[in-house]
Image (cartoon, rainbow, N blue to C red; front, side, top):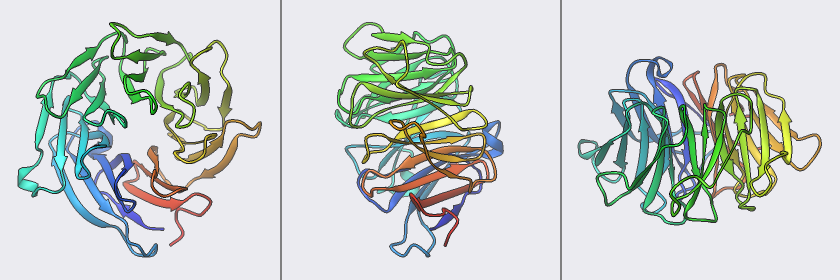
Length: 318
């Protein structure tokens, strides 16, 4: 399957919800510590042995930590930038017309962006300024800022079944569940004893959420009774950077880690580890599963490579 070499270190990769051959990749120079960023929009060749085509590339003065596709406009992407800005790009417009918007409210690095899959004009961003912000496309300023975490918010993700509900994972070791109609978070609990780096909702059961942490573990929770996790999955050798539930198989999720591997898990079986992929040679920090093509996966990492492959095959096999 194809491999794409990025000039900078990979941070995030996301499949388009509109085109099965398209994906966006967020990258940062010098491991995101200092330097520029670049957002790549790539197209996959119908022939698996052919390389990617770069549809567009957008440069930023600071690193880009995350990217999210619009759920309402097939050419629109949102970038989370290290200077605290949130930038919107339209791939249908010429590069000189981009970004079409630069939203500046966060006071620290923006670490995640997530588009609402149900109410398709709104999206979330989370930041190292300890906040989550809610935005809509038609407004130049955020609708609301959610300020309850006491440390960096690494991830904020919408519930796939409830348009007003989202969860946030933070370095303060907590997960919070929010309803935008409520004045404060509706639930808070400590899923790990160390920083919580990522979370994701199950796509088939709206009460199930996965968390992962610096403690190297992934845990599955039912938010109706969060005293004991449904499952605890150990197998990564270092911090788990990202988890994503499969859009096609209820019990399946994928993770990537500073141990340089991407793992696929089935949280309902005792031997939960289904596959381990060790194709990256540096921290694996971005992973996604295609909504449109079952089993199609993508990952990126600090080795400046983007891989796309079918689950069960070797990502390095051409």
